[in-house]
Image (cartoon, rainbow, N blue to C red):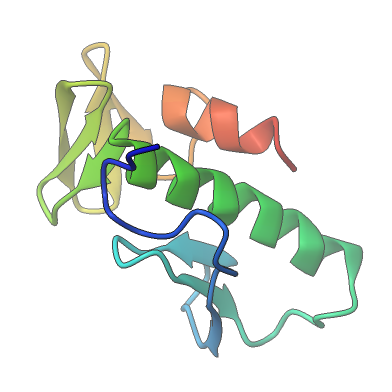
Length: 110
């Protein structure tokens, strides 16, 4: 079986605790996840955020999701990203908005 990004899908996702300045979690293109250090690792919220971010990692590994500082690429379509917002269907949405299809998918995994 071939994997698009060359990462081992059975390898545990590395999680790093950081000060994320107002966000709870972030999935990185290298397959790691950053979780805000204010979250207790034993809390239900911590586990919820990890499940959400793991879906983003899975979508990046499959090639469905990617991003740069200026764009988000979802299923082959490019969306402008600027000042913490993403232009989707002609409207600016705050990053992490449930209106964004990649966020809807990750939200369903929480």
